[in-house]
Picture 1 (cartoon, rainbow, N blue to C red):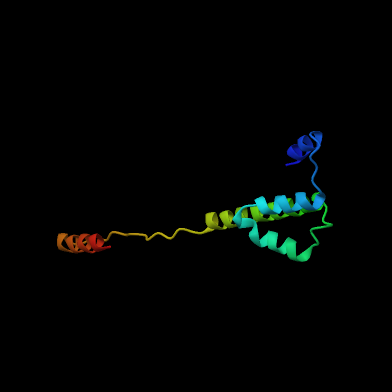
Picture 2: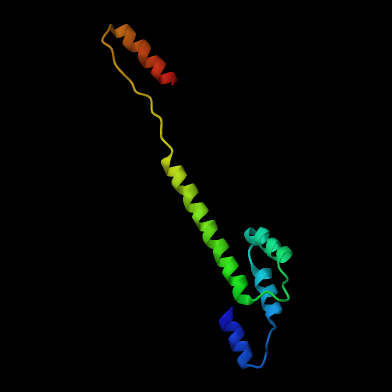
Length: 105
């Protein structure tokens, strides 16, 4: 974005700070809408510095990434439960019954 703005300034097309802030907020994906709404309601976009906006968005991005990493780690920590089987010695009829019961499981 900054490179584009600088190139446009070289062509004598300038944007105000307010216009740049609004353009960045408009181009963010839908998943960022709660953050955009919060910024629009909490801050005066006419005086909000572009650097402050970018800092706020970067901080939000890092916190979202940390939350995603934490959720991924929690999934890995979940234990897998397995049933333990044992065999007892007995007659062949009991083995057939056990096999039938195992087939049902």
